Image 1 (cartoon, rainbow, N blue to C red):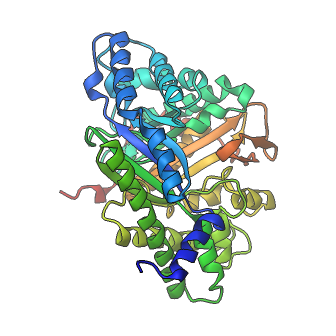
Image 2: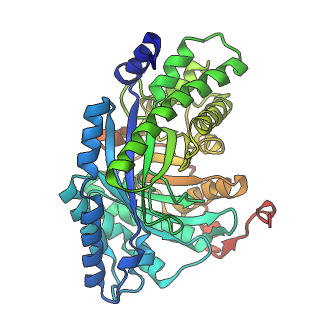
Image 3: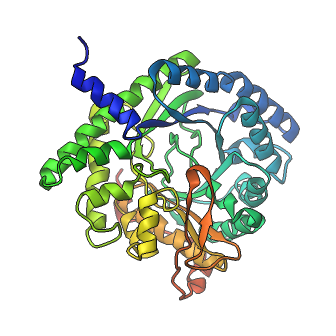
Length: 453
């Protein structure tokens, strides 16, 4: 017998009771060979290539769901940063590229496509500037396209000109999707140290250092971790760490099995497995509730950052022991609107924007899916981005900002985005201005410990 009755029951419980799932399988495709002097020709080549390579993705995922009984929530596509691909063309506005990508994924039944992206941590090329200027229109004219801009890295420092421009872009995107409460901003991420193999939206893109194509898998199981901890409420921190690590190991092994089989059937290399606890608005699928199971009365109270540090580190350690292909972000996400426990904590007054920023120093990403008052200025948004980029740069980790200034709404009002994006109360922003700081421009130099050669 390969598995004991206990192990079989435990695995079934993970899926049926504790909401374990494959959150995403993301097919990464290089488009660098599609570049041409004509924008029309470039888009024709891209469309033809994606239809050929990504055509079987959804059918393959559905077949695996049936055969293995494992839910695969999202089928996604990531492509080379469009700023690199479109730079050779005669286009000034890159919106048609986003519209073409949107049409392709709709035709194939794919949920999202990432890669309307630029890498500007050290400076701008003409293609980068055109893409960034196109983001508000592109996201307001498409449904499934996601954008990202990397404005900082530990090696290069923080491009504050890019930070300032992204504050404006976030604001413009919110205003252009005002009828949807600024929903376009939910598809836009600003990064420090962006990983090139991330399967999670909105920050996925197929990095220049990646191969021709590959399949990346994102696994999520907050409910499994929470259930494991609930059975050991009196455990010491040493025991707690071991419990989380063992649960993460089991989740990772399942994800690798599905990912490698999907890659084999698609005829592409298996890339990485990203074991990130990605919550949903559903009860029982919350990272905040895991932290509270550790002994916190409410997420956001004193001790929250320490609890999140334990969780994130043990998730990574369990994953690395289970697979040699762990990558992406891997750890714990803390998106406010997508986590019912986070929403409850905001409503209770125990979780603030400042506390969330502190938590991002130890979690996987950063300030994620946070609704802000609609009158928040571009300079204030840029300052929020700058703070988060500094945390990533100094700590040599990936950090990101995905905030939504909701047009016409103020602190405390409720906004609902729907689906996995959920909803949340609008969070308060510090009223003191940062305009003069942001207006300086230039580049914040990298930290001394970045010089490792």
